[in-house]
Image (tube, rainbow, N blue to C red; front, side):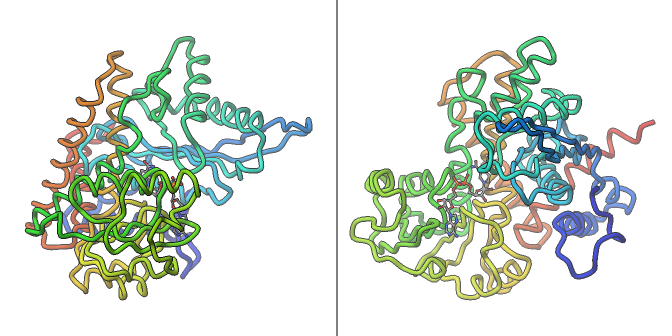
Length: 424
Ligand code: NAD
């Protein structure tokens, strides 16, 4: 059950009610009617499924899964599937609403959706994981499809899980259905360029903000938290554009390299050591000191909720770009705003991944694969236009970039909802 406002225990943080309140505020900023705000907030479809799995021992265990379509006024639902022991309906509802906003901000023809199973996948064998995935896919199959709702990888799900879902749905429908999920391997309808697309989007937004602020790329020192799928390509992409990455952290610690990290040397070091710590010539610093290192741009690219009031107060950088999802707490955001630090919010900064998914789906529907150059060119265009539009509205609305991006998303959803009217 997705919690309704009058059902929530007071003073307990609820991610769904938090997102709902943000959408409400954006709607009020735009002068939308109460009826329209209520329509935009309410999730369209919430499906909870029981997922029985035969374990290797022969016993049957029960898991619970969800798929939630928050809004499909602009197109089919889009959003990842996560497997995690903390998953619940409110979390999935909040993430589905985030996806509605993100897809609208970058103006791709999708609504927002999200799914998940409450399970610790590290406790499953590969066979158990496949059986869980296929049973969950079977149970949500009536709701997903290339013209309904298109899942993608998220926490603890990857190309293999997407391949099993694609296969399960294809078997059910009796024909190949590659457009039912994105994040697939190339051999079954994946796209060139997907890996690194989120980091490229972050880089495009960062460069565009520097231009707007009249700052030279080659004078910027960057610190990045996270050296994973998003953080690692960022070190190279930002360095290629003249910026100096002077600090990086991963789960094992943080390093400081005032003269700038060499991306190739770092990639080699990481491949051997499995951590950024120990990069030749670096100083090791306490992980919680990363954002205090002398720098101009801070990029959280790891966990949610890390930029707290305290971290925001001591941050050295004068620009922040949210590569991670939800890295800033409400209090942290207020401090950054009061310090006049522009923040490119996650719904814009890290949307390169969902734009790549859109391109993969478009290719699957066309049955025509693009070259990497075309993919990159179109990603750059989509992300630059999204940044420019948010920037223009930021000047008009005179609120933070975060509030502007949310308002842009809500405005586009409202426009589609209004013009479609109310059925019946
Ligand atoms: P990942 O698992 O590949 O990498 C995570 C990185 O964070 C690793 O380097 C890990 O060591 C580091 N890390 C973990 N705990 C840390 C800690 N306490 N301190 C410092 N570093 C720590 O994940 P990813 O795919 O790179 O995703 C990173 C963030 O970006 C997440 O918030 C994710 O939701 C968001 N995101 C990812 C994509 C994508 O395309 N992968 C798209 C949109 C948003």
